Amino acid sequence: MRRAQRHETAIAFRPRFASAARRRVALGCVGLLTLAVAAAGCGTHGKTGTGNTPINGRMVTYALPANVTPNYIFPFAGGADFTIVNLDNLQYFLYRPLYWFGDQGLPYLNEKLSLAYKPQYSGQVVTIKMKPNLHWSNGELITAKDLMFWINMSRDPQTKTAYGGYVPNGFPDNIKDARAVGQYEVKITIKGKYSPLWFTYNELSQFTPMPQAWDETGPNAPSHCSDSPSDCKAVYDYLSAVSAKTSSWTTSPLWKVVDGPWKLTGYTPAPSVLTFSYNTSYSLPVPAHHIAVFREIPFTSEQAEFNQLQAGGSNTIDVGYLPTVDAPLPQPGQAVGQNPVGGYALDPVYTWGLSYIPYNFDPADPQVAIFNQQYFREAFQLLVNQAAIIQGALHGYGKISTGPVGDSPQTKFLSTQAKKGDPFPFNLPAARKLLRDHGWTLNPRGVSRCTDPGSGPTQCGKDVKAGANLSFTMLFASGNAWVQSAVLQLKSNASLVGMNISLSSNSFNNVLGTVIGDCGPKAVSPCPWELADWGEGWSYVPDYLPTGDELFGTGSIGNLGHYSNATNDAKIQQTLDATSTSEFLQTMYSWQDWLTQKLPVVLQPTAPAYLLESINSLHIGSQSPTLALTPEDWYYVH
Image (tube, rainbow, N blue to C red; front, side, top):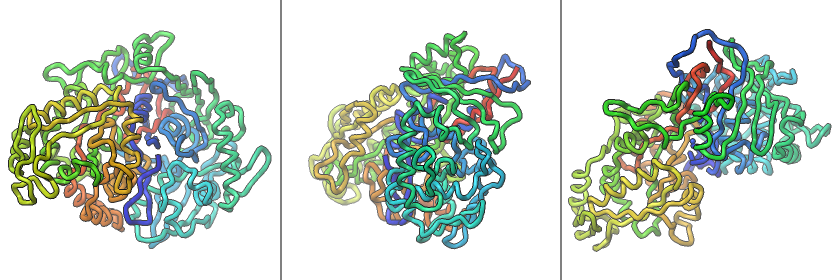
């Protein structure tokens, strides 16, 4: 799906829905429509039974998530191919973005692993200086011309809309000019006011230099997309067509030219097995010792992967995942249970994102008047027992969600207030009191009704009619054990205040498809949902800044519940307009603390993207919340 768009600005956003498909992919390092998250290594595990002497070389066998395999190699991918598995399990290995995010377990810009120095801002001009003496695997230097290749392909009117991350009024619509001014330097002139931090984290994060060897419209038919956007459509058509032919991945000379740490040296279809060999021409830093071969193998189900993980022997998976449903429940006094897989270290990995359940604020929804009441949203949140969900359905693996900014990991973007913990911990008496104090006659185990309509401080609220009842429909994704358990618990809690939640399950795609469907103020008919839980919420990748415009700004594509509040929009805009980091952070804290109390969505725990299992003899470092794999940092020990 397309990225969300910032409200009332000329700069666009590219958030992504964290999805069941994303979660499954994460389970491969292991758990949109547009999918694109990223594991810069995977957890320092305190391993036992092995020595500490690094071994150079050898192969790692890695389990892909169930029923998910890469299918598109060209990094300027269209919407249907702009997926997590294509980025994290194929493209990022071979072709590195201009700027790399993920540094020491935090979703920050990693200058060491980026192809360019930190961008410089002066007025409306952004200067990008690429690092000199970095090479493609064919020996050519990585230069400003390679960056202009990607920029020009983005700027051509016919190809910009083909890119899966394009949003109207976003890049390139928000720039006046982009040009190379030297071998390693590009200058971009932006329209309007902007936050440098935002433009770096949410726009430049997308740029990916492409080799001159690709600037052609067919074999031995060179073109000039690197110099002129008008030449890019024919080049894009050719590269996209070849990319879709998986049989070309190891045979075409196009894909042999890489700047990433890996080369694709083996591919077998049905089932798709991908083999990568270390690129000895890789120019950026890697450890002195590292693996030589990285092999990805697919599975038809999580159970099939788990069975092979436990079997070991000649079928050994070096890095795989433990399905959450198979994680043992914690014993008294323990946070989590014991790892059921012998010889492996278990590490929960959390995505940089937000887990939530949207309300449907569509004006045509029959219950929207109730959802519009602040006191009701507070009462409803008090019925969500996040701590119990973590200890029960999530088997001890989970993080409390405290507001509109992700809590895991804790970043400089999270306010001091948010770091104090759950702002609305489970409190059934408080929920009852809020409803009684606002004109509702409670009917526990039945349906409570509004018996004091009106807009007064002790009445049901504006537009809530006499006799209105606390009865709602809720969609949830099937096939996800913790989500099903969580919504059943919420339904039970809600019944104790006379609130009836009618649950309806469907596949992840159908639930999210219904929520994203033709809803909102311009819809022909009301949306067929009032609450929805697809289990994974939202991922701040590859737009790494959690500024709220993508999820909560009026009119944003990612604002699935159609929440609209003028003060919220103004506070978001203040953050986006900040021209210094200190100003940005202060406005960010002010916005999130204010919006947390407004509860535009129902907060629920963040589940791990995956429970990583890695064999004890393999060192894989610390896991990045962006989920981008960096197996070039991995090595065996003895």
